[in-house]
Amino acid sequence: MAELATIARPYAEALFKASASDAKSVLTWLDELACITAQVQLLEFADSPQATDAQVEAVITGVMKSALNSHAQNFIQTVIANQRLAFVPEIAVQFRALVNAKSGSSDAVIYSAFPMDSAALAEAEQVLEKRFARKLNVSVELQPELIGGIKVVVGDEVLDTSVKARLEQMKMALTA
Image (tube, rainbow, N blue to C red; front, top):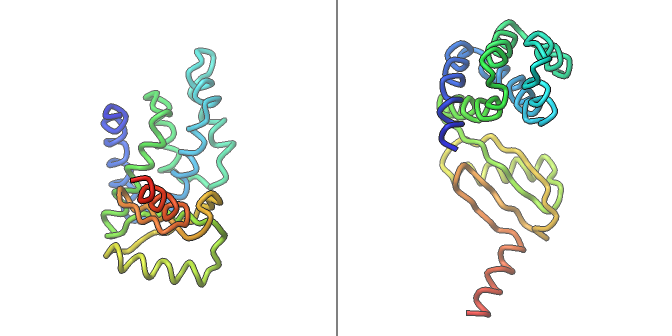
């Protein structure tokens, strides 16, 4: 949705400029805030005419596990006052993109059929950084339906070496 990105961009850029020296810690609380504000119940509460801005802020800060500095509190107050809570997940995505652009890295998600130990993850990360020719911030998600192997998503690029993908390729070849 273009409108979502258009509205979220100035908030992400302003937060990035205000916290350029400490972007990693901002990512910690911003990702948590994005998860919280993605909850429909919170958005309904915030949209209620009976709920004040202070009450909404109190609910959010009460649920947050991260310690909130003055930048975080100001950011939360601003998005609440401007009725932009629903945009926080997109703000977090755009903020992460700005941090990655500055550091020259990209986020990568490895989908694996089985849990990966730290040695296998480190080896996979090294191989993938060579393959994609950039530094990667790797996270792992389990997807048992892959049967075996891994599927890697870096931005809009996908590298699928899973058994499921190979079976699909064989199916297509046999039916063609």
